[in-house]
Length: 406
Image (cartoon, rainbow, N blue to C red; front, side):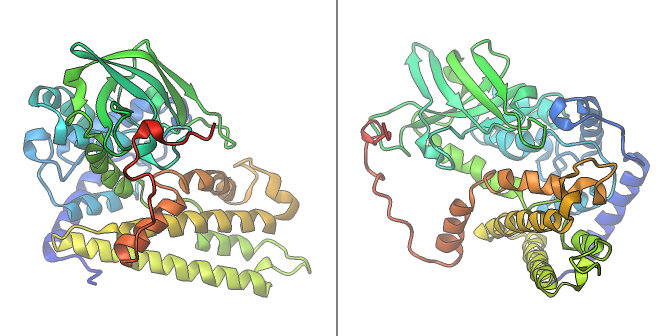
């Protein structure tokens, strides 16, 4: 691994820093929570500014509004941008997962209609995959689409859809052939989220926000021209989206081991001495430090691969599964360490502006988003370690004959 920039990368980093110094916000804006949409105007303005300068999607080809840059250039920009108090990013799912799928499978007119506006932040997309009875098994979709002349009629329910309440469009995977095995009877479409047959119900989370949604389809009529890929070939199309999702979701953020160390130095323990003097707590802290260093070097491996023009493999799944579990364990221990003060979730009163509380409430969702722990362990076992795959008894069973648990 080489942790240093090449001369070309160093020059690009300097160029990015100069542009950000001139154009990025200098202080955090007093905006309402992203989930409420109050910061949307600022987010769209920042996205438009990046697009105009060629920094919105650096790896996209010039014909679609990008500069045709390299993946490592995108990483460099992301690293530098993170140092500034930029607005929230409601475009990540659209630009990272949905629009690349449209660019791969849609006709030219559709691509010309949607790629530019999405890149400039004028329109927002969501991904409609997960269902109440399917969990992380995308191929278990029961939302149906029935052919009616040149149209399709969609009925069913999706859940866990991030940002659906403020999205303009979405991509949805539906069951079009119940007589085929579950992976072979799916089709993907793009849909207008403002269609009167689509109902979005935000899910109230324990954090107080509503980032995720239930989405109901009732006789939603879509044109066959809205189909992405061939009929009943939606699983192959979905894989393109899912591969992008693994990279877009990435690792966990939030209060880490260094913030915990800072708090443990001042919070009193059982004997009145700083909590950091507790040997059991110090052992946990050492474990988290080792995990964090391992994740850092795993990411450095990915960066090295990108720098050399290689494509990172399924080992990128390691980052989320380790960091999300660590986030949950660390936040839980921190709140316990704070004793009765751990119940205070007021950023004005709680240590580190209640960062531990935010991590604790976000971690369970992060362990589901982008693939559950179990899904990611299977990916690592089968594709990184080369272990035998799980036995799948439903592989060749027609979907209509699969048990439903009723």
